[in-house]
Image: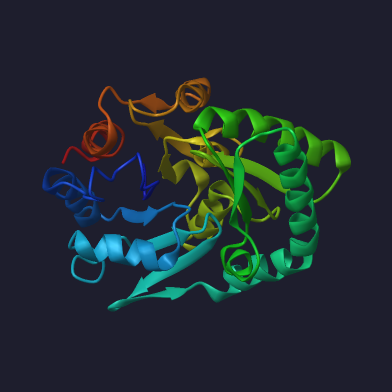
Length: 270
């Protein structure tokens, strides 16, 4: 039975205007009342997530999300009226990244120079002090397709060179991260902190930086919404997951009704 639901924000649950509709919150309320924990799993920074949560009437007012995963690598736990960092984990990732940052910066700047010399439209998005806070460096391309194609090349280059870094793409961004970062490993850390097994965790995402939590490597239950990228739908289907017929927040309702409320009803008769 699912005991933790972790979902991406943009393109997964947030409608236009960064809104979580009332009917979606009603379904989330139901599973929270049945004891299911809820977490975000997003690349957004902590300040953005708290603003989104508060503007939708969640957070301390409703008692959930019980946790926030920010920057694809850091965990914050709801404690009373505020989200506090899971310091043991957050410090570990931060220290790892500080050691690797000079290497990541050199690689991304060399790649920027090479791409620009070829006439590719690309710009720095995250580097320097901001990078040290967010545990990644990132560049922005002019289209999602360009980002996807380049990230495949970069991924192979990092792998073949043997450096302890990896990459993903997030819409038109391409990011380089330390080995402990990524939504999948961070959700796994959260689940262990909560004393849960991977099969008791359901994760939902729609785009490239969700793939590492959806591809089966951590043993989670997986699902996605109908507006997800084709590659993500294929990943979810390949790993026995559920692809909703509805997009964004309506897809979340569909997934929760089928995979959480449906299973609770079957197992308990509630």
